[in-house]
Image 1 (cartoon, rainbow, N blue to C red):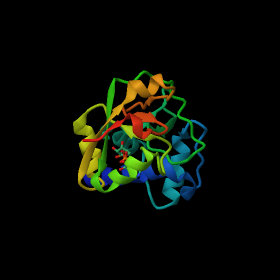
Image 2 (image 1 turned 90 degrees about the vertical axis):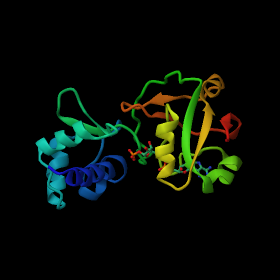
Image 3 (image 1 turned 45 degrees about the vertical axis):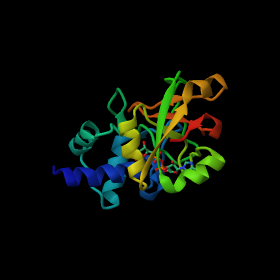
Length: 182
Ligand code: HQG
């Protein structure tokens, strides 16, 4: 399987498992899981044939570990990035490091200064453990700007933090008081 083909199928799976399962007629459970056999059957019906070996290869080679297969091997979910409001990843709240990073684009800074960080179309604001990752995330949107988030202070003020299975820190929103701009 070429890298390009894998990337194409990985994008398709992200779309289905994070945002739009209904487009191929499947439903995710409350925690975002779906039966792999149902997923593959419905994907094939919608012109996207993926066999189990290919699915396992996508899960194993995803550079960011975007997907998790359940321990019994029967179900799959996306580890983060969902926009479906009813999905609760049921992650336990965790204590974050003192500082987390958020990579954004320079054109968003004035709006972030006014409103803080909003989850927008996703269920959480995504925060990175290090500046390198934040730079990569921000570069997707334009000229990257790295914000420092005083995460532990936020937690002390009652904000909850979670860590996805692939190491992305998640929180509902970041008030501007906890953001250090460069
Ligand atoms: C910005 C990728 C104006 C926010 C990445 C971001 C990540 C505001 C954009 C994951 C704002 C939303 C998520 C405000 C936030 N005013 N703009 N008040 N508050 N924004 O893509 O964090 O490859 O939804 O700064 O690696 O860029 O998909 O979020 O620039 O982990 O697995 O609004 O997506 O992972 O953009 O990226 P996104 P994100 P995958």
